[in-house]
Figure 1: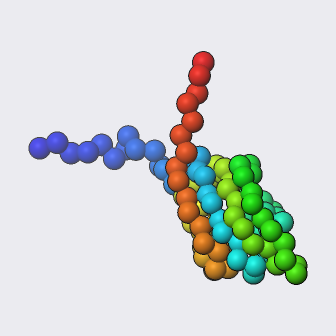
Figure 2 (figure 1 turned 60 degrees about the horizontal axis):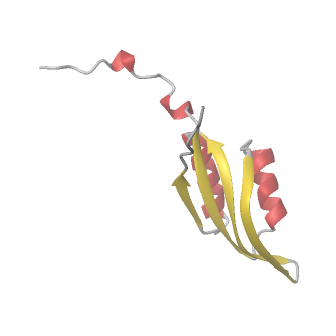
Figure 3 (figure 1 turned 90 degrees about the horizontal axis):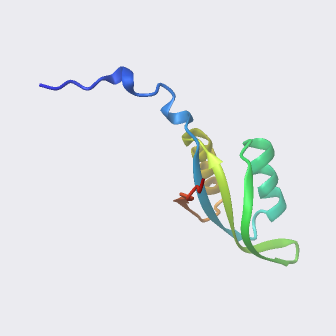
Amino acid sequence: MITPNLQALPKNVHLIKKDLIIEVELNGKMKFDHLLNAIYQQMGICYKVLSANVEYMNGANFGSFQLHIKANAEEYQELEFFLNNNKLMNTTVDYTCRKYS
């Protein structure tokens, strides 16, 4: 019988950061710049805006945008909870980029 070597696994598996692309739909309840500020200032997640199609009507923001983020599991869960709590539809995909040497 083969027993797994549990000591070979990294202890901080949840701290490994992954590249993710997240798409968020704005529904007029939260401003685009306030949302980006909350992601960076409150959660400490750095991002790059990949695309944004945002319209402003009577002070409300509508549309969608995509962010490239690098986050560990805990940071991502906090972000997902924040978006869902503010009723913002969101989708996330793992992003793997080829690295050329």
